[in-house]
Amino acid sequence: MMKIAVASDHAGFRYKELIKQELESRGYSVTDFGTSSEESVDYPDFIKPAARSVARGDHDLGIVLGGSGNGEAMAANKVRGIRCAVCWNRDSARLAREHNNANMISLGERLLSRDEALEIVHTWLNAEYEGGRHQRRLDKLEEAE
Image (cartoon, rainbow, N blue to C red; front, side, top):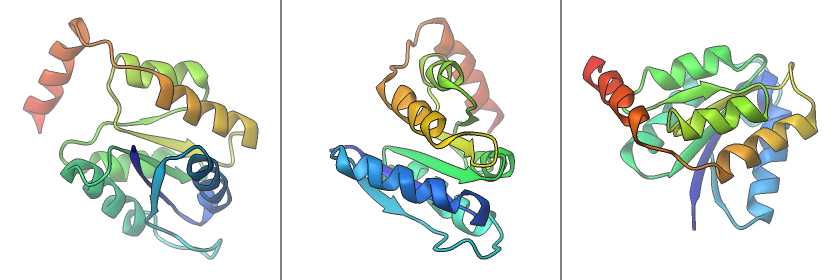
């Protein structure tokens, strides 16, 4: 069973709850790193623990959410071994996995409809890393860490 870490700030809370429910209904094991309401919080407090869990291998993948998703991706990408992509449509999600082997994605609740957010998640989860020429580039990213 695939294990997925989810986390959000207050601006991504509603979609986090929606995505968590959707994933659990499809048989994924989901761990919620917070937040637990729409009350204003600082996103690194929730995103970084989720990213650390993915980096350690406790979770296979991670999904983080905020208003735009940008800050959340930045916080996740501060954790060594994380490749978190901001995704805004199905193509960006598919390519994040196929070319970049993204082990986390970040979504902006204020920028996506509920249906778009779910489509992005499913597209990303169902895509497969292509390897090949893309691995050379990922190796260079790891060298920078």
